[in-house]
Image 1 (spheres, helix red, strand yellow):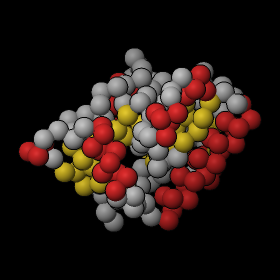
Image 2 (cartoon, helix red, strand yellow):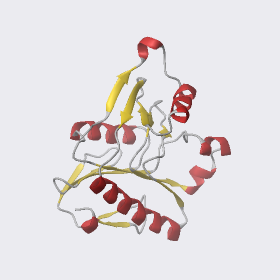
Image 3 (cartoon, helix red, strand yellow):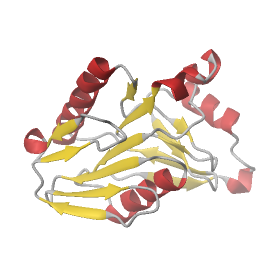
Length: 192
């Protein structure tokens, strides 16, 4: 199994948002992320089990979002330009409708310049837990209001909220969207 590969491109000069977007557009078959420090991350594709689990998470979130009509749901292919300059793709995310509609059409068509209100990272067997934990903390530090790091291998979930310690749940059956996603409950029986 492959894990993400990071390249330091700083010796060539800064990788700007525009240059990063052009790099992604020129290489549509490769999934990239960019750290706030300008490091380019090449993200490897997921295996079948992880893809199935992620599809289930997105399905449940999308179903709730369509009924709720208070925001927009995004899959793992969506890259967000965070306030710190990083460009990151959570495995699943949701943005409150008024925040989404405040963006211009051009901003919606490229990498939206905002942090989602909610993110999910799903750990695959090749992912290093520490790197995912750091990514989750980066999301929270940039304005994400609720984040779940789901670790199917250990049947554990880490819940991230601004200004709070990370809450760890072992073997949860479901997760509540709390006040960020009112009424949303993720059924984990299909994930674990």
